[in-house]
Image 1 (tube, one colour):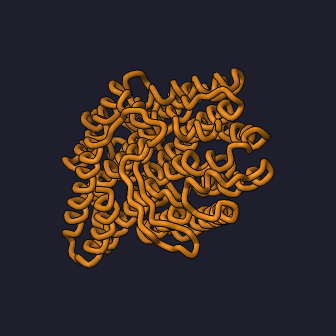
Image 2: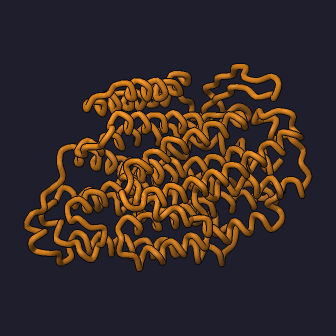
Image 3: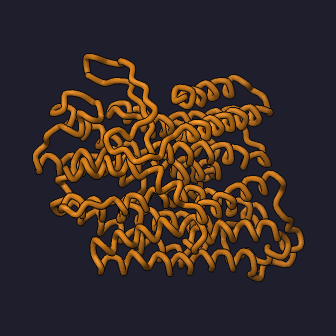
Length: 494
């Protein structure tokens, strides 16, 4: 089953690349839906019973290089299962979202999306440090081509170059950090990396080397400079992949690799610095989103703010655990929010794409009056908006609540600034919605507006259903990640 999940996107990418036909999108979406159904089947076999001793339920272990002591070791636990679900639910919808567009070299476009899916599945299941790094870099190749070839005509080269430099340099620091740990562990096997017996100074060095790559990918303030332009000037499907799934690689990396390898670093100033930067990102991203008029940049800065809260929750629980107060609430909330954010941000960027095509502008001040012409769109857009705001009974509520609770346990002053996300998100998201849907637009443009197509409705309705279902029944996700987080945070405590 795991081998099928790994190989199907790779084989599918090759088939779509070779299928030089305008109908290649149907082959690509078919492969992506098969991958999604395989993931649901794996989920049906998954056991949520908490078992700290053995959280892995699917494993592949094959020899790779005895010389450098690295193995083809893949496995799925609750964290991996959640992120596989997110990836393999979103990819077919992302492909489907492009069906109303005429992409040049369309077979290459869809082949690259499937190659990206292959890299993502590899990242979320790799249990060997070298293997993790290889797949981490594999994901960079297709997204660079997608943004560079199908992005904004005027700025795509500048934007993709900045994105590539930031992420590639950050990845090199991570690789240096992993090699440093390998010298003490004598193996890239994950359990050996955990038991490398680094002293406190060494752990601090390794912490910052590895964290830098994750901080760039998330991104964390002030390493976010590449994000707004990349999200704005990439094709919509590229933006969806970046914001909805790719940044989750860093959340996964922090939990799976960073914290268990260098937990002692949190006892010093490292953990406090990360908390400060995360909270700064929460407030800074929200404030910039409030004053911006470019709809895609509003959503980009919104993402920066939400990600800052997730990272703050993870590190709040980690710091408390290392100090002797065992808890993994923050990480639990972060993973629920990770899934919710992926669904919501993909939906919001697709809504932005629809509005941009209707009004021929990204400026929300030049939009308005679309709710009357498009009631279906107005309803689905609002559901996704409420999820992003964390309204009760939507997918964004329970994760945000748990995150704020964990930060409150860490520091009652810090949570005041973190809690601003609730108020500020309502301000910039409702402002964006109000301008676009109820504002006074150009009458000549408003008279030509029409409601969404069947394809657009299917994509948005599917995402809206997830927003509601996860909001009403969040316990499945909480139980799924429980045993894995107990295992990880117990290793931090130990």
